[in-house]
Length: 273
Image (tube, rainbow, N blue to C red; front, side, top):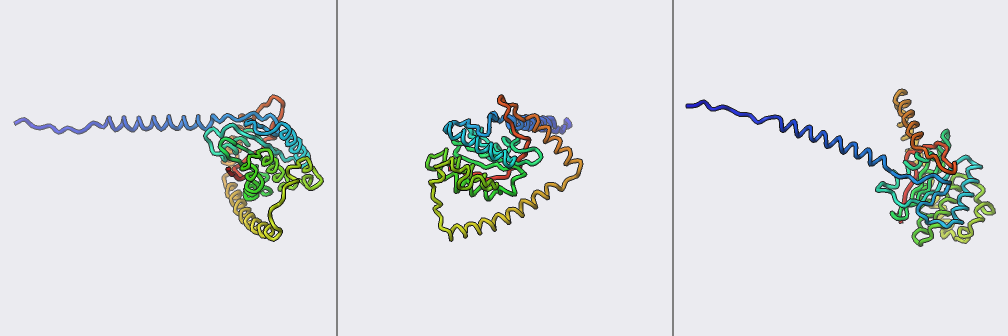
């Protein structure tokens, strides 16, 4: 009787499966990196970049003069941008990366703010640079969007909503020229608006907002402190890499307008209508 031989399954298919899986993961990783790097940012041609074409020419010109005056008085850089598309990104990601790409704000102060409107996705965002997060908090940015911008957008008054948002941002940053008799006189559509809130209700809303902002400020302060707890070498390496990336991304615009090298970390608020 012939002796039977035992056979064992080859291990080669398993190795082939592992190698194939590793190759697929590598391809996905590379594709994801290419996807993340292919955002097409609009060119920084001024303080108002109306890529979507929703602003009247006169409104854009007046906004540019208003923002230029604020920058001269405070060194803060504020920009307004309307977008044709968010290109599949969230408005939070697009806003953070656009702020860094343009370098809005002074490099040593990070005092930039972006008002971003994506009319096709019906979304709006106020993106706040690191250096202004204590003056224009997430809660205040949200209130500006909900109370000053979105009511106009829902009525189709895009110009008025953008102007109201910009004026509210500048007032929150302490620009006293926008009080009655100041630069706000250029905007009759804002002067004719009623408050719509009684003094008592307004006071209660103010106290509630102040309490919420205080706790939010403490939370953000702790979060910023936690980010600083890194080794010196790691922090220096990360800073050098970030600076190099910003230099590579910085726009060279035809008319010479460009940001001052400010940085953004996701502070601000968003809304939709």
